[in-house]
Length: 244
Image (cartoon, rainbow, N blue to C red; front, top):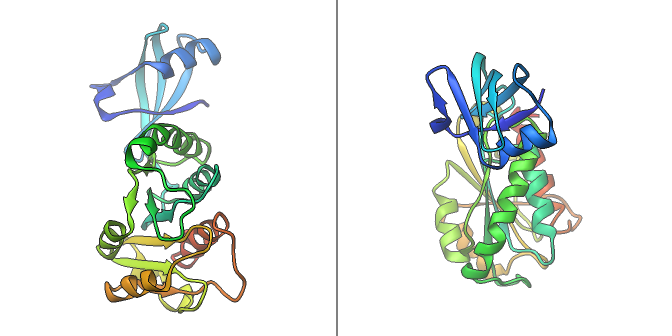
């Protein structure tokens, strides 16, 4: 059954209104008709609905039943990703969303080759959030993870340290994830994860993280590419916290 995300404002009594591009897609591309059933998701709840009226501009659906989404993790994991070059960030966002992160925060660090300013990144951000949306649809998520504005290193570390648990992966040493994560401690907690770009982090950046209470993590003796490291780290956290 086709599935779309909606805003809470679209729910009116026992009906849901769909407009804009989704309405056009449902009617023209999917060729759905009055009486067809449609799953609509809002705030981790799936609404099973039936189409009552349909046009290119608006679709009205009747709510038949509703059920909570069971695919969301019992942790809230935010990925702070140092800006990689080319289109690697698109790949990282897609896979991180599939694995269960709730937010992706791009960061400019000392060794970033790609260094867009906020104005130029704002243009790209719309596309990145569309990638997150499509990944959320594909993986049956209950929310659409946000790709935030780009942050400088200092601001990112400040935000990172405010999480219940915060980690930075460092190729020159640290403790393993298994020594700091277990299901009972992490349940219903928010976690921040910081991953470097090509070339990793400067030692001075790791020192700043350490001083603010961010736990330094080693992922083993091998050096992972900047697009492999976040996917591996998110997978490990999800597995150790009982979410995989």
